[in-house]
Image (tube, rainbow, N blue to C red; front, side):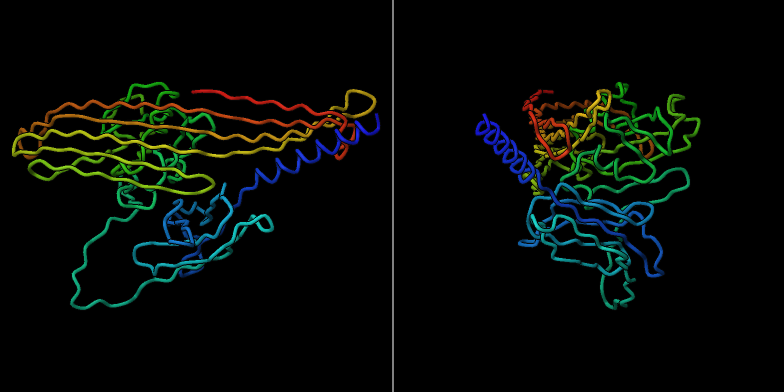
Length: 369
């Protein structure tokens, strides 16, 4: 009996150590300052693979200048900072390993680019964040946010926007935000909107408009605010198209691709596009609970490791007829499809003390969605 208990304890201890080793994921955080050492909000921050400088993830600095990359697989990374009018800044490399999973960059300061260019043609580039009188515009196209992010993930990084774990969106703390696609209401439930945004790849988006105080021209249902997502549309004459593709690598690989076709004449325009994204994400939680109702307390140490697979498809087709320079009539059809699978391995260690295991429960909770 003693031998059996010792073997059981050894097995449980080994399982716990293996689970912890498998669940290792890294994190890089920091704080960005401007030339006056004040918080620098909404700056483009990219995470690069140190081996080939390919972009792994992209984000924006928060209102207080902070930024964060988490769920990083072991390896070497660089962090790049880019803002129009400032010198590009590169930090690293940072090694994520079992011995050091977290790196913190404190007080990263940007410097203005005061180089005078003579005899050079300068092409104006739209800023990532535009503050207009009636709205805030996020120019997603050709930005760091377009790589490896869905529309919902981009909104999570947008100023003034909050997204909870169920995908419910609030703007400046107000619930019931009206989501529009190319200026037209979606008429979808909050759950359907969240699924649509999860399946819309960032490389299909031209810009996102955040309207906190809608004027009377908008539907009354948008009193809490409006988020208008504008998808890309080709404006070249004749028949043309494009194919895009991208890959990212964090803990796992992810990829996206798209096809756009367009035929434009003087009085009409026919267009269509299809985008596809595939990703695999890891998540882990460790929860310790104590039951004090009995004379002797019982400890439950639960480790949950989950892997989420998702396939996203979204498509759009339409026709525009140009009545004159200021008036256009047309129709468009939008659709999306999203499916995936969750796998979750749950190990619960039960004992009379936190570091003492008397029994264990192992469970698997797979689910499709």
